[in-house]
Length: 311
Image 1 (spheres, rainbow, N blue to C red):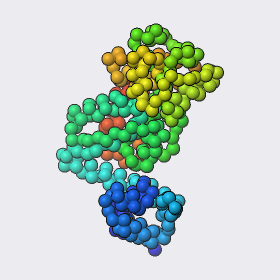
Image 2 (cartoon, rainbow, N blue to C red):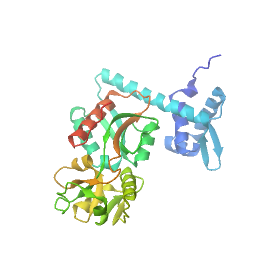
Image 3 (cartoon, one colour):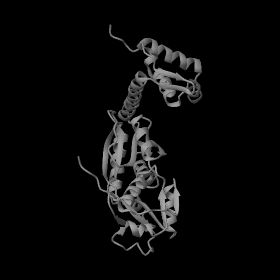
Image 4 (cartoon, helix red, strand yellow):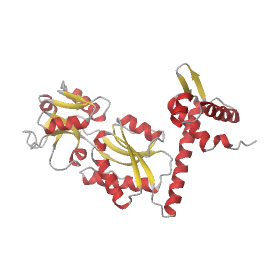
């Protein structure tokens, strides 16, 4: 006998289920959704009864999806996103150019490139609203993979599973200095030269820092940064004020404009083994507004001096 979806597998049931997956407990899901815990518990029990499987492992610290729960969660995320896409397209056909584009980005993108793209996009489509979350590279990819965001703008040292690459290109790390710094006019800087100067580096959960540490190790250079921060704006400000040297990709620095900072290539092993990636959820149909925004963002990256690889 073929199983057929029932009310518990409809929009509300799937949303309740996904919120428990995200939050790890029925009580927390109840608080976030403003829905009675008993109602959420009933919906989950009903889905488990209809499917004949347990969706969660009940543990002392909360609820963790079982293998069947993970499978259903992946389906549920896509189903709800498909529903949003259809509603958006129907509104577009009716002439209602409204909707929300959700973006997750690393700080290098979030400081200027993404806000600039949002501004330019809304000049012609003011009905589209945006949500922007700033996170570390791995977190950006996870949010895209889990359907928590429509678009991810991040950096990567290797291909990531479970996401679709909408656009990418080389993003080698460069030295970032004030325009009047003695190194600003140099064609390239060696890693020993960088290590002799006060360095402002991001934390180790960023691809820029990981690649810099790998390259320094390969070159046999010991690095003791003068400043380490999880806020790239502070690192760039340190360099702008003449405090020392920061690192970044060229196009993110150039997107700031106004000659605030200069970037100089680094000569060293492996410093070019990084790529920027604009990614979306694998297997998901994107709303037209999301696709249009992605294309605009990629255009701005190229305008700022980045390259765009072709398939």
